[in-house]
Image (cartoon, rainbow over all chains, first blue to last red; front, side, top):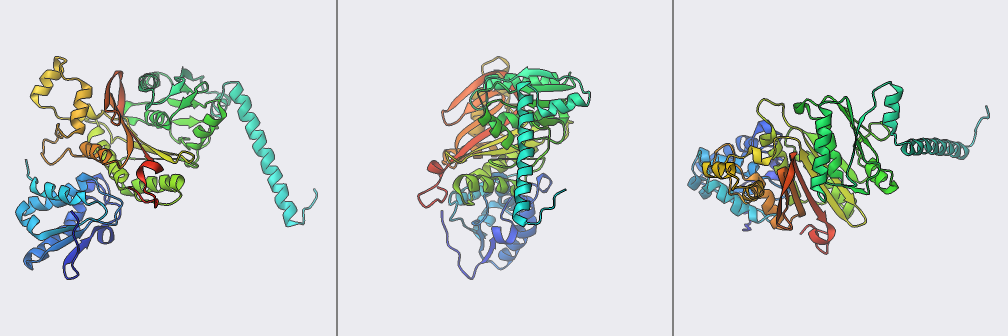
Length: 115
Length: 348
């Protein structure tokens, strides 16, 4: 699903704000992990957006690509901190280069459990 | 000594000197090849080191095309490396080989977890084209392996080799940049290849190490055939293999123990996401199915996986049981200009 960014919205551009080469799931597995992205960028921005009752746009374009473990750790991890419903109500995605990623991420959020 | 005052003459003099040195080196290498001796071996003889235990490689030495013979040879090398001081894979007579076997040999030679103390040598092919391909691989190791002329040099030409024990996106990017520059003439992003490379690294880092062992090392190469505009990616580790790293449910354990659940079927189920991760967490274990998905989306072609006793050619949907198990996990895939790029030269 392709979405468009609104100028007014808060947004994270993964390639620009984090890294063009997203890495593994956890910090101990290598650099630019999903865990690092979650802790340093996504979770603080999400909290701000939640407090302001605003949308948070995630721009996935411009990177070299993504492994599932990175996406699951970041977005699934966020859903494990809050709840899938809360996360889905705040996050909006832009992925023109790999449109299928948006639905995959939504699945990771919906299926994020500790079991 | 005559002084050379002109710059041009000086350059000519230097060039002549270089050509003479090259000709001398080549004739020496040729002489040694005819004696079936690499320069590395010759140096070892001069150092008084023992004669290597020679194992002839299969005539078509390739994990992709001839997995049974290749695995047999690699296992024999590994077996002898545990006993002898120096083992040699003799490739002098081979008709063809693919670069995957070279990284397999390097991985085996540097496998600290299996306690390989032996040097593993390779006698280079005599066929001039194959010798070029062999030398071009830049596989001259600096630890337990010494190839061809015995020197150590970085990967040049059309083959790029790299190894690590972590998941590093930067390395995946370098391999892709190398491949796209050589094969397509420009740097391109290959998102499917990048994701696959990261999933392979993840697989090694999280699942390949046996309990109590040091971190497994993964090895990756990309070989570019500039004439046919194809990049061949290989990824390998010498860990416990996919099938030893999965968590089976009790019915599968039972069926496997009575021979009703075979390895090819298991690997097929792992790739289709029907078997979960050994962590037991429902949201883990998506890595190998993701590789399969990327392949199905057409982001790469000719995906081949060799792990434990299974050879899988996913393009042909062929899952074969190997008579002897492969030590580790091997992935191969290809990117070709015709299949993966549009008319404007952008990835499909």
